[in-house]
Amino acid sequence: MNLEQLFKLQNELNEKILACKHLDEGTLHSKKLLALLVELGELANETKSFKYWSIAKPSEKNIVLEEYVDCLHFILTLGLDKHYTHISPNIKPNDYSITEQFLNLYVDINDLMVTSSIDHYTTLFEDFLSLGLSLGFSIEEIQITYIEKNNINHKRQENNY
Image (tube, rainbow, N blue to C red):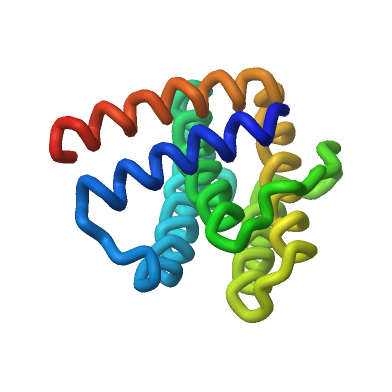
């Protein structure tokens, strides 16, 4: 995964959003954290991994992947905010259930909120990439879909989204 490229693309989008919306960067950190939590919930909802009461199948792969990269946008943004852009996450699958991985990511985000450190950020990134692998996405698919969604997000800003 070319993290340098992804951080660069995310930084360009973030700068466009700040300029288009006339936002003060200093007041946005908590909104970005909440946005990540909400997006993570939307991703979990599309996987249906926690819906033990339902026989509904997960959404189509492309829908789940789009929700996944929505989360990635905010994870990259949080890294940019704290200058945690020179990380080298260890990308590896794990044996945890999808539901357990989601719960673990909520813990990771909480840890980052309580004590923002590059170690907590790297753990969040690693656990998030591991979830992607567990959901059946390749690193290449994630990167390509991120770039496609990043382009859409740029167009949205240009059209007063």
